[in-house]
Length: 367
View 1: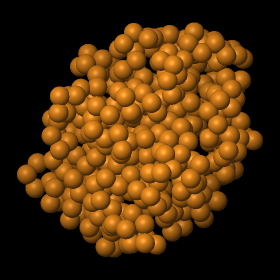
View 2 (view 1 turned 135 degrees about the vertical axis):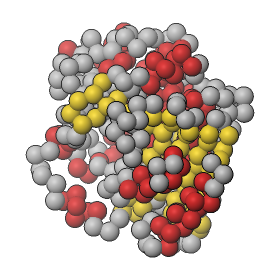
View 3 (view 1 turned 30 degrees about the horizontal axis):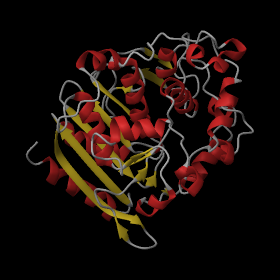
View 4 (view 1 turned 180 degrees about the vertical axis):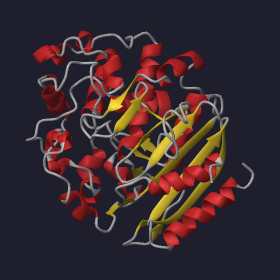
């Protein structure tokens, strides 16, 4: 890993210099030690504020990885098992035939409740009790455990409500107390970020042509039944003060350093902190479900809360890698075989993961 910092810095400088990216962070840990801490570009084009290692990016679903870690910590504490029915912890959730949905099925995206009501507003998304009531009243898309489909929004609310019902605390509190605080990144890892801290955020922007590409999608795609189009994440959505401040744990705000450090502390100790014991991590990162995604239509492979595989290889080729990507192209993963924890955050929202793939190849030696 001797020259990786230099190689990554050169690559992200070139991406910003070419205009392909606006602002980037890359952080990599190996066996608990940070080996890459690279930044490039600007966090806010209007002011010229540069990206630094502590800049916080709204990285969307990347931070599902932290929500997942919390769920496994609570399972380790014995507050529930993976096969505990959600309705045993949250009785209202059992409505309309959902009484048998288990925590395992929520984590591996086979629960059958991937959609939120199509009349949901942005204001609704920011109202925890309203969203949980709507999801509790939802009807199944399929028999739980028989199909797989990405639960983009519902994953966060269901996991978060399970956390609240079993600990009596909001998931943001648990994140701070059990993950971000012990790791020393409480001011760089959030679900809901206090408005007083928003000045530290990178400003999101849509990549050129993104709106036209979205408009060209077939209107009968199943994903259009999972949420109203106005709630599909874009820069305007991700720059809203109410969205940034709200507990929506299907996504979150993080620096690359904070999320890479989280994966590193799943793989092993980081400055004396380990988030899960090895036996729990093995169970949590084993393949749990795979198939064609019922919402997005592509092949998908999930462990319990993390997708399997690196960006530059198939799940079969890299079965020891586990992580989650986010809308716009941010990505983070850990790899139990190599001890590498990787995170890339960015503020230009692209429809692909090309940048993260390029940089992760440098890190893993595939380039």
